[in-house]
Image 1: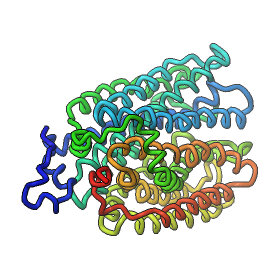
Image 2 (image 1 turned 135 degrees about the horizontal axis):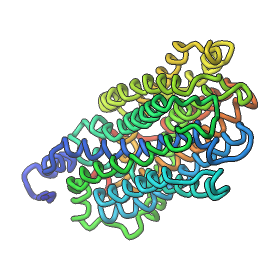
Image 3 (image 1 turned 180 degrees about the vertical axis):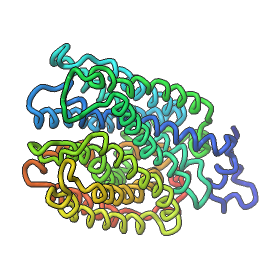
Length: 470
């Protein structure tokens, strides 16, 4: 693939290198879209089947104690992946900035896929005792390593091959992997729970679904990984990265370089993503535990299968508004669009006690289904609007030769602050102070994100290559 540009050519100095990269793109754009979308879909599918199981399955099979303690312990292992994600961003970012985007994306996919498959083969606490949660935590950590390296590579694959002026729209494709992966994960769990006639309120450890049915989503991930590998092995390196390497811009230690020259951008990127992460894991992992949990843990005692249906319906709003967000971010700029959405997230958080209290929502069979669906739909709409532009916003903060590492570290550092702690803290807040406190927690995350957005530069007009050449 040719990526060289003759600087002496007429008009060359007036043209953006991004334009040249677009002209030199030899891989069909549909293949790039598929490679960025299918990989993140698989990675998020793997991640979410664990999230679903961490709420409804793992407290029963991998942890010992009363229901509240087992749930908190399961949430803690759920958070182990978020601790691993910045490390994964550093490891895979190092190779992504030195070797290339393509090879690193393949490695990230394999790491996540193998760990997910092995989770499906684990013995439970009732079979091997404390070895079970220990092995579960290790494999969850490996999942985090894989996802830590996945997102940045997929975002760069899409953004570094984008047409001028449409970078946010092009970069939204890997973002769609999040709702698509969620739909696949929860849809498969719902199908299996229905086929097995699983009753989440019975807590019967001899139920076939708890004995072996829950393992199928984990084991089947190996098929999806094989498809993802086939697609990704057929792509080429991005023109922007290839040109940077042709200009000998490779650095010896990307992580040291990015912390030395772009530490402020890492801070900004981390807090720009904070409210996005908090919102999503409240709307998926925590709200599931709150809805199906019994009154002893402050829950609504709603049926597991019934609530999964509501979540799958609501997640379509997430998917619909991701491309909408891409268009808005290209038209109005990253900062103005995200500032408005963050203010809306803060207002949404302040309204939690009106939406979700047992007095307002009802419990068990008396739960107000339409009110819950409306709550989920509003939250997922805001999630699509805030998440959609992020695969353009974070990469634009960093130069080419450290972009994989820098955007990955910022994205995954935010996962610790905004996601790893959120389900655990929210479950504790409900038990200690009531559901309104969870909304205040989300509003607080929104304040921090708003400050970061105000301090951040507008990056929509920057050339991805010229930033590296300075």
